[in-house]
Length: 299
Image 1 (tube, rainbow, N blue to C red):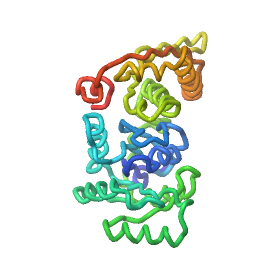
Image 2: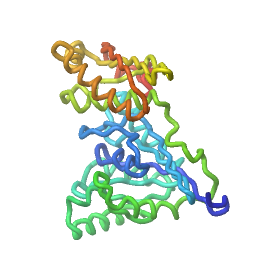
Image 3: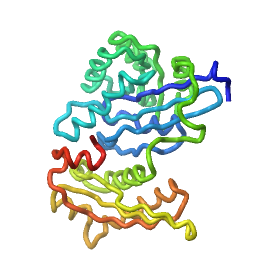
């Protein structure tokens, strides 16, 4: 590894409107799938930390919930999580969509940036959907609204421009030793990612209202090294009996499919066979209950 006098390390927050590709970008930057992905807005609820280390630098990325006009305790907690990182990191990546630059949430992010002194890079995503002329106009428009350190143009889905973005980040990091060991990928436990995998499958497989009313908790995580098996028991929390019925499905068909898809992803993540047991429980109005939000890790 490079000597400490030239080694760079720092914290980088990825912010933007809901569903602009923040989690996809995070996964591309570190070369692993850590953050769950869904076409539904507000998929990310927690702050996810991911570490990228090479001989010359260590970047600690923070993927945050989308900044939006929050209503309800859960959404307020999500936006607070996103905004809380801005003044404490070394660099902000403001992610916007090339084909939707007028998103109202972008204005909220710009307003938040006015209140911090943290250096910021403009990152324009989904450049495959616009012409070079349109891209140039978008960059010029945003640069007139805020003093960015530069701009990077990417397609997070296809990996286009990721190396250029990393090259722009490095000079903006402070000199200093690594914060984490070389082999660290995240500070979050395996239980967290297993719960997120289950929630991702629910988001993909169920109807519009269900994903936003669902929380997942891991109650038991037991390893049997002799059998190369991990036994996981998880609860899926919903707010109403009708939602419970949808998640379970006719004859349990939906719950079995959620479990099957989640188990396969867990086995890839954990490098072990997984026995997954799922229960669906009703917890009325949990999104409005501060105690439930704290229990589920959202406060």
